[in-house]
Image (cartoon, rainbow, N blue to C red):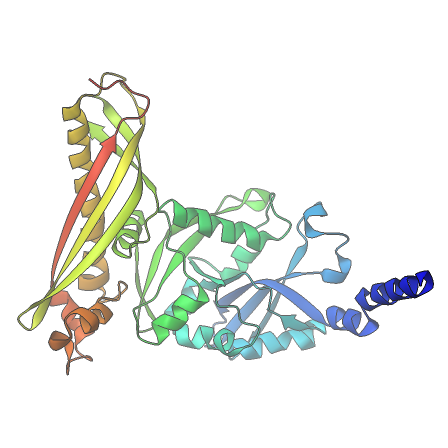
Length: 375
């Protein structure tokens, strides 16, 4: 009986060992962790991939002293052709199942539509719907080459930046699935913009606004205030920081949290009215001139915060809808659900008609004093 148990354990162990075929598959593939898409100057794609050298990586990635990736470049008329070019240049195919981010250069975004640039990843069985989508002002290849002191795979630094920035109201996080939904007509797409700061080993990535698209074509961008307004409008704001100037305490820093946004739609003749109702609370993080915080002072700060949030949302609406005609909030879709009689029969005209609609922003903010005396 013991002999049979030993044989069974040995057979199980042998079955778990990687076969020669599996090793051959690994050696014939470049395991991609990030992809950059740039313009090649001839209407095609200059593709760069950040890939892990799986067979050269000893132990787990967390045990590597430096970055465990290299950046390779290729090109082609289309994205799929550019990926296929790696077979002839590297002798290996690109394996994108572990890809974490797709970075698009500004020049390429201005020349090609999002449908053209992302269609391959949506069709491929290796394409992951939650891959991060991001734009850069320079070349995407340069973003992939930025080293990371904290992660063995630099792509993880980028995805962590996008995640944290979204949680603190500094960026709108966009996944490949969001681009697919935008391509289907649910809303116009947006993407976070990153920029490179520093030189050489001191390079680092920072968020730098939000790119706007209309029908998949690059239209313009939002600054930091407009990005906050977009997060409020989409009910995606989790928390953010404001610094307000007060008469009694000077500059006061607040942390906004517990944010909730409701959007109400009503017919207005042949047009429509949209009301954005935002509620939130905020806590005092720091004040320059410490003193006794009375109820009147807190009410004054609440009013100032309400005005600031209102300006962020109204500024976002002015840029996205009136200036660029981008339905980044999916307002036409809301119309179909909540006021179908207004849009029925005029669906093709309504993205443009959004410019003529009435927009009202109502904000209710409550500022609480933390660590200060209340009189």
